[in-house]
Length: 104
Image (cartoon, rainbow, N blue to C red):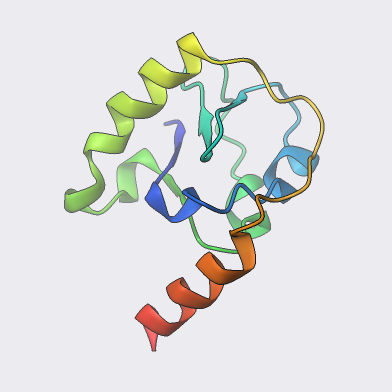
């Protein structure tokens, strides 16, 4: 089952997940990254690499996030492939702090 990037990635776009991915399944826009479910080999290496817990396997995706399955599928077909890690967005650290506060 493929992995799905969720809205925790919005305004972050940390790319540690790209460094550990053995295939080129990540795509990007100016807000976040997405996983192409047809290219993902379900290795799961991206999950622990993501510093904002934005990636889930489709089977364990919380119900309120199910819509991200179709978003990842659609966006990955429209957007360029990200093959190398890149700098996070300028808003990344602020977003990470917001997400950490939401969990506490």
